[in-house]
Amino acid sequence: MTDRRNSSRRSQAWFGAQGRSGMLYRSWMRNQGFGHEVFDGRPVIGIATSASELAPCNAHLTRAAEAVKRGVWQAGGLPLQFPTMATGETLMRPTAMLYRNLMAMEVEELIRANPLDGVVLLSGCDKTTPAMLMGAASVDLPAVMVTGGPMLNGKHRGQDVGSGTHVWKLEEDLKTGRMTEEECFFAEGCMARSDGHCMTMGTASTMACVAEALGMQLPGSAAWPAADSRRMETAQAAGRRIVDMVEEELRPSRILNREAFENAIRVNAAIGGSTNAVIHLTALAGRVGVELGLDDFDRLVREVPTLVNLMPSGTYLMEDFCYAGGLPAVMAELLGGGLLHGGPVTVTGRTVAENTAPAERVGSDLITPLDAPFQPAGTGIAVLRGNLCPDGAVIKQSAASPHLPTHRGPARVFDSPEAYHAVADDPGLDVDENTVIVIRNAGSKGYPGMPEVSNVPLPAKLLKAGITDMVRVCDGRMSGTGYGTVVLHVTPEAAVGGPLALVRDGDPVVLDVPGRALRLDVDDAELARRRQEWPPPAERYVSGYTWLYTQHVEQADRGADFGFLRGGRGHEVPRDSH
Image (cartoon, rainbow, N blue to C red; front, side):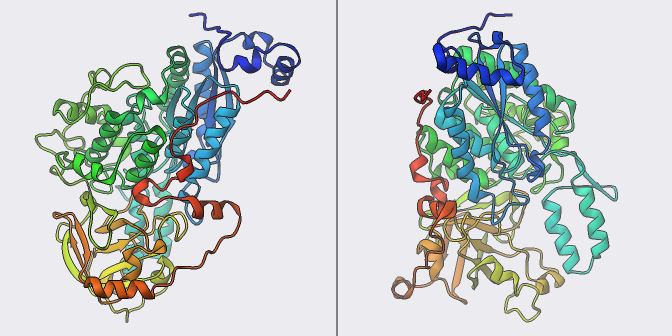
């Protein structure tokens, strides 16, 4: 084993200190049973874990942390586990997105304030992965991501059931009388039958793949199911690797460059990934000083086909994706077609091209080849502009109905998601299949936190009439497990005076996805008159974190990060007060 002792390491400012200070630091650590020899200058590795029973996707990460520890010890490091908050979308109200920035702040400050030379980030649910990446990027110590892995495939009456995706379908079956409450209770228990995050290509799976595409996660590790023993092998390998990364001074700033972000954007298109990746990647880019705008997401994906046949856009689930070759097989296909940069370095110390060289695609109908893709080029996320969204909006084309990307219809406006839900089952609701449902005040400042409410269920009377989709427009987000012709992230949001605040019932809304446009067919003079009459909403929060959030959160096109957190702050050792 290589001798990794080094008196100049960052951690030695604590454990190698002379006199009273060093004695205090070492003696308190020894109450956990550590011998004096572990303070000899070897790399000290933090294991940041978001394990929590309040975040079911992350509940198993305590076991993953133990596997990471084994790897760190094997490589000659000292592993020290510490908890972070867990922003689980499954339970948190009003939305986990409200707390992503808080978690990123916590991760950043915990890493900086403690005697760490490198860190392994254990995440699972939607917001934990980007929050940890954002925090670690701002500190810029060597870091490797280990996501918790998807659940095993859901199974119900001989069919695969996808988490999230089938929630919407079961709700529709309940509303139309195709399923009873008792049948639904049974079905929901079939959906989540193991540890892990969503096994559809929802935001959790998407961000795991994005972390791997960025080079911040070991190759192939995004797709191993949480219940598979190789998930723990991956965690152990990450523990070994982070010790080497400390030796090599391989920091996020060397990995997260412009080409890495372009790779992640194109991979997200190829896997049919979540629209939430747009916000998270934009926020992460802001932490490392990479200029990334909405138009990049549109431009870079126009020539990228959807290669992965996975729910919600397709048929299969993440467990199947793993066995078909996982993300390395997708990246190898894109690289072979000249659609990825092969040169960026990754946490392995090798390049993207070197990592993907041994990858192989197993079968042909889940991970499809470039010359016979699951969906053609240009079916990824589209960025829309127009007088209704001057700073942009997004739509997931692969999840939209083929007859609706070009549509003109009258608006039916609701000032909150709750206002819509209150009347959605009313048989007398004045809507038809041509109506454009507008949900506003669901943005980052207005809700607050930009919840996943945009893909509201269709009115019950239309579901019963056999209508399966209609255009919806919202300044909020949509779960990556969701589907439908839904325009999201309308920016500026209504709460800050965006044009969405000026829409009235009956106004003609024009959606033109091929032309990348979303507009309101109302003349400028009338809109100017309405703006003069528009009353800004009263401030609802005067203290606490939610006040801080609403005062400082940026709009969706900037990643909904806090402006004061953009850029990095480094890992300078705090002053010693002892």
